[in-house]
Image (cartoon, rainbow, N blue to C red; front, side, top):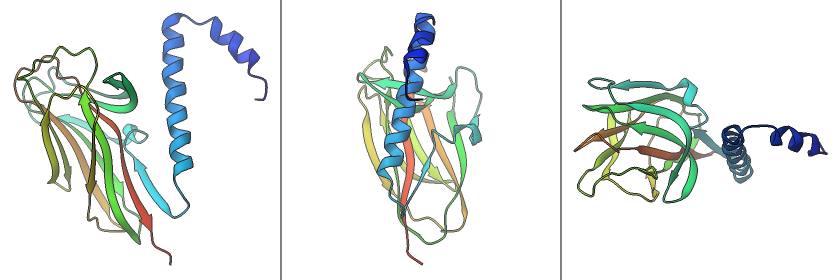
Length: 195
C-alpha cells in the first residue's frame, strides 16, 4: 500500500472510541516491528504478549475480582504492550505458559517491567506481590505499588530442547481495590550457538 490516503479517509469515518482502539493497535504493530528489527539472526526470543492466546489464566483460590488480559497499559504516562494481571479478591492471579526452549541456546534471560496502571487510586500502604515461577520454582518476586514502570532482567538456566512452564503471578497484599497490576512487554531472550 503505497498511497495511504484511502485509509486515512476510512479512519476519519470511525468514532473517537474506534480511532483510539486503532491508535493502540498501531502502537502495538510499531512495537512488534521495532522488536523484530532489534533481533539478529543468531538471537532467539519468545514474547509472552504475542503468545497470550496460548496462556492459561487461573486463580489460586477464586476468580472473583480478577481481570487478566493482553492490552496496552499506561504506567507513569508511558504505554507498553502488557499483560494485565489485576489479582482476585483472595489469592493469586496466575498467567501460565508452556514455552519450547530451542536446542543449543545460551545466555537466556527474562526481560520485563511491572507496575500499577495509571488511574489507580492505590494507597501507599497497599502492595501487590509480583512473582515469576519456572517449572513451579520461584525465580523472582517483588512487592510493589509502583506507578512508574520498574524494569527487571532475570537470568535463567533453562534446559535446552525442553518445554518449560512459566507463571506470572500477582496477589493483593492489602485491599484488592485499585491493584491494577501489569507486566510490560515480558519476553525471553537468548543466543543460539553456532552448530
